[in-house]
Length: 313
Image (cartoon, rainbow, N blue to C red; front, side, top):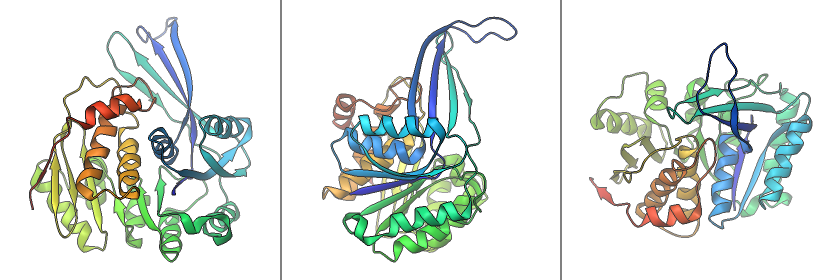
């Protein structure tokens, strides 16, 4: 089982317009509501590929109920803690004329320390099936009310259960989280820059930053760079991969897709090279889908045939 924890999930309202007009009426051409949040996206990718997953996190109000229902309809096991307020709704507006996206993200409901303790008890309860969990993914932003050290504290407790932890967040929560030495992190270029407090321009910059993180106790660093070469780095090897050439429709969720497919490949017994291929193919397949929609399995399978990796150390 691969578990995900999304502390600040969302409903993502995807809207298509011909052109976004200021101070004038803009007609909506298409509208779609999707479950959102980085960890939830990881679970959805795993489920799309036929893997076992459970999604943890916080929900609030009728929006939270809708989110839980969406996941249940997709066949995804979920176990959320209900809090006061309303689960946030993020709005993504895509212009067909230009391909540009306008993203408006809400803050989310306030989560108290007592709520976090309830969640912590649930995800660490051995009698709840946690023994079968091989990987646990902590992903996304922190909701109002929780300290920047939240991921660090959670990772330290989960590691004691022998579960490999993956962390995918940004800013100070990431800086604090890596102090707990998770098994894996997957920053993009901008997240990596903020993590190591230096500009990342070249491949050498990427590898230097990754090596520094390995020396701090992280076992595996995967760095995705949009259409540029991605890297998978451990103390024993470095793999590089140039993503397939595609016409990107929306890059939203591609990083989450990478993590979901990568971990499922490891869970099924594949080695790091094959898992890296799975991650790259899933990220590219997701970029072919509008808005916050995630990949189609058939796109993943076709792109997987095109992915080639290179061992450079």
